[in-house]
Image 1: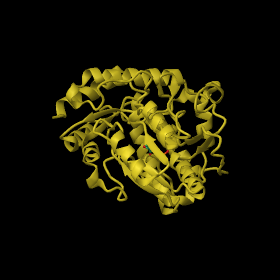
Image 2: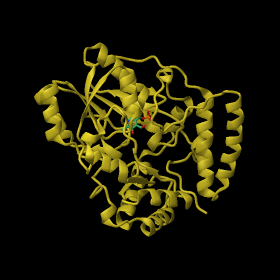
Image 3: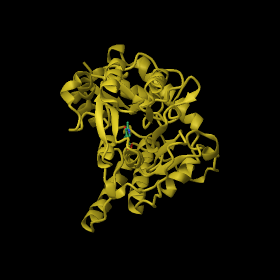
Image 4: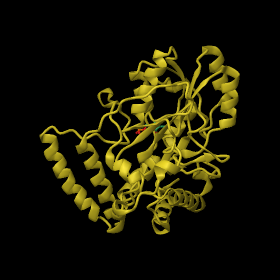
Length: 376
Ligand SMILES: Cc1ncc(COP(=O)(O)O)c(C=O)c1O
């Protein structure tokens, strides 16, 4: 049986490639004020602390979100006021402007969902009109752009989650675009066991892709080592979860991630992700699409489908070897969820199908065929 992982894996030849000057030539890595963390949420926490100490401890925040950003901000003592996101994931600008006027809050946090740009021009208008500080969350859209400008360069500060798009064990970034927000964080090396465990997982995933199922046998061996580590109380920190632990807020990005980032082919990644997304767009009926088109210069994280029988489709696809996920299905308890029915619907219906750079047409055909058989 095939196994199609939800994230890109580490190919053996990446380790022996020559460096590609990614840190010198590609945004945001070439930005002079980019700070690297183990997780993006670590940077969000430090940003929250900084703003709070500057007397800006209240923030307008979208009701549709992952949840770990909220945990990081609440841990920093920031208060959040939530605004509406529409069922196509666009900001409800009427609701947002009303909230800006009612609350007088000067910090606006916004998210580019799945790597598709929000409307930066409209957001810039609001910034000008109300003198706002913009926090641009581009965790899901590394390398995406809008009108020849990269996402993550519009806000006063922007946020990136590198391990979502790149074959690396950990890594996120906080980019200070507005030099008036002048702060730095002294990070420390992350725990080695977590980095090695995650790196091994990504190597085994490659084996799974290439030699159906072999990587999973190795994963089982890795899990047995994991059980021994558990007994010895050696903790491993996962990625892709929705928790936040303040005791790890100062963890930086691992050396392995620095090494691998400089060996990826950015152009190839962007091209493959766009091509794979387009394939799914053409092979899955329109009634399941969340987005009507792939915007120019967007580099999507996955292919989102809106599906009424999501639980059945999720269970069946998983059992057929497709590593899919029920996107952001839980609402953080701080959000008054009853005020946001459109967001509830997104949380209940969206399923993420993989389209990352490791997948080819054969695997994408398998995913779309299986999905089309199951979805109602
Ligand atoms: C929108 C958004 N912002 C921030 C984050 C935090 O990223 P990280 O997992 O690197 O902390 C995530 C993902 O978890 C996210 O989806």
